[in-house]
Structures are given as C-alpha cells and as structure tokens.
Length: 147
Image 1: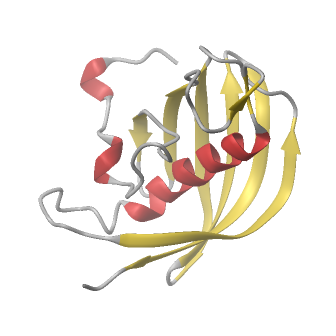
Image 2: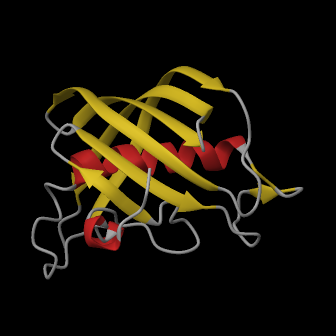
C-alpha cells in the first residue's frame, strides 16, 4: 500500500497512547468497520530484541490498530481532552508467522466482527510487504475515564 500524505490520518486523534507505547505511526484508512495502519520498527523500540520486533510488540500493534476503529467515537472532537482506558479482554486464534526486523515498515489491517456496548470483537492481521506476520481475533474493552 502506497502511503499518500493527503490520506494520512493523525493517529493521536484516535488513540490515547504516546511514546514509548505508541505502536502505530499512521492511520492510512479508517471507517466505522475497518482500519489500516502503518508502523516503522525503530531500533530503540521497547519491543525490539536482537534486531527483531518481538511477538508482544506485534500484539500491541494489532491492539492499537483495532482500537482505532472503536476509539474513534471517543475522539470525534480533537480539541477535547478525552481520556480513555482500554484492555485486551481476550485473544483468539492467534498465529505468529514471522517477526519483522528493525527498519521494516509493517501494515496492519483490522475489521470489526461485532460490538456490544464497550466491548468489540475484531479480526486483524499484519504484513511486511506481502508477507503475513501475524493474524488474530481480539476482543477489546474501551471506556472513557471521567475526570
């Protein structure tokens, strides 16, 4: 997928994560049912070990990608000081096929399967070039934190 600047969506409008836990650089596509993100693996990333992005990093990247679908409803006003908390409540059918290396740009895709209140079930997968790295079905719980 070619990254075109005019299509890039600011990830900070849809996720509460910040460095060092932000595991997505750009939202390339976003609807109410699906999202596509990109992320370049940096040497100083907390999930890099022996020049590879660890499984935990891939899972966190998937979770952040998935939460962009659900989280957009909390971040509709970018000027609001919205705070949310989210949890992976379960991971089903996970398959790790390969680990990306430092310098690799990964593309993650997620599609909403179902939603009930603040809980959603999402299918997601991550690629480097056309090589499948990981795929999973994830359940997330996201809630706004009232000040």
